[in-house]
Length: 444
Image (cartoon, rainbow, N blue to C red):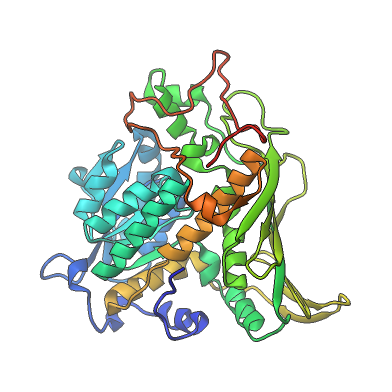
């Protein structure tokens, strides 16, 4: 995996970069701005909850404004845009007119064409296609995780990442723990030997479930019955091609932390999963639990566990196991180092004044203004693929190697992306969908 060309420690860099504003810029990447202007035109594609938050966080930086907006559905845009406008217009950051508001499956192209920097916060199945186009058009990118939902998408993202480097474009990915002081301090301590040699890990995203957008709701929004493509994109979390399953959409954060702290990728995976409570209408095809054992290159193992069980106890975080002790860490609880006898040897508190989702945008603007290289797409892609890899293990019930996973020829994306086209998994006569059956489902 390619490393970013950054000499400072990540913690030192972020401490500096998060304070940088346009007023302190030394040089400006000439391809990033309209001729004769140092103001960065920012566009956003995908105005859901994460997208609406991301654009406000991006606009905390000086010398930029919101220039174009794209969304797949009118009702989603109509709900989001007034709130975005209310927050940005008083600051002079809302530079939108009707000619730069785009709706539909090709909205992303129009937004990217109109801007210098683009925020990609659509469902993740679209990320490879949109990132690829943004880099082709020479635009800087902030994109949310995960970056792919299958191996075909992973390969596209890596290819686009290499082109971004060739063009000097800056890319930041919303795996925000990499920009959180708590995790940066803990990482430095682990690298300095606080728990000895890293020999394994455990990571969790166990929650009670997420939103659901029934077919009836899509029909009300559209004023007619949705096509199957419209319905699956509207209720995207529940379809693997567009959402990736919860192991990709949420648990990728924890898998990314483990890959980061271990300093490598798993070489083999073996797991199980299924649909224990996810039944009934509008639950699509995804599982509600995944449990994966990943083998590391050094012969150690790490355990991955994620689930959506209503009325159950939640757990989100990571445990890094070392030859001298362990680290237990989560954004909510902070970090605690233990020796092998269970004694607490060190605590790291969460910095509640820092918002890592704001820092990551400050980092992007800083690198654009200073024309310094940054490309999170490499680790963003490999951590996203780690989640896909885990899902491949649970869907198939088979032991799979990393090399087999990344070379899988299974492409989940529809053959034709259009509102009247059919996704690959169409509803059965009773309205349910085919879902993976371990021992039967082919993932390679």
